[in-house]
Image (cartoon, rainbow, N blue to C red; front, side):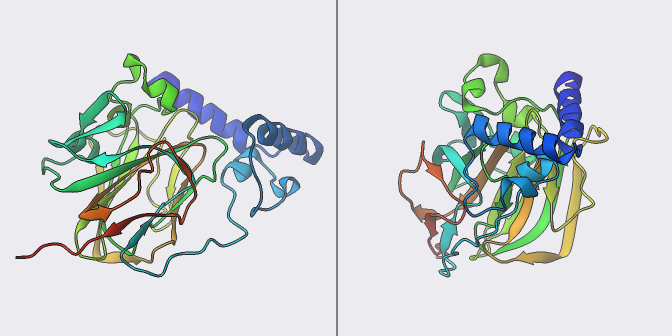
Length: 272
């Protein structure tokens, strides 16, 4: 664990260091060229004083947010690597590699009638993530862990089995538009210096190691409107979203999608 976490911290220091403007511009240009980053809708390349500022760039052009409160939107720019129902409390981190959902979320309760999406944010992607629907956040669980790569090619290797569970992560527990539990999991990865949550800056990741998960509770819950920025990764990583009674959705697996793209429609829960 020490190696991947130390490498990530060192990379974070490099990314945050403000080099002289001419050198920084060159670093930024190399990064943009290497990962084929499209900066349309973002500030120009010379405006970023550090590589980390480029990683965590904010949108300059707002995205359209579907006003239909029952429409679930993509929380980030990403590749959807898996989109499927939770089966026997198992989910896939990649095809052929399953894991126990309870271990990821840190709970014994079994998820029934849930759908999940795996979003992989590569180094080229916009690194901020947003509320996929109107949320009431009641709890955050922070798990320390490794910082293994979550690149789909790496996840196919046996040594990365259970990477989602082994990696540092924060689990946001909330209720959706129908009052049902929704889980938003931000997973750390190699070179991800931090996961930042805007609604609670007291949560610090990739810092001091604690054996047991840290639980943050919010009473009353924190209300977040659909499309509002929840936080950011300070490099690429993954988000796993678990939603209940999400009925209609297109086959999005394997597709690159953008934040605010409709991905599913909630159906009213059967209370009979």
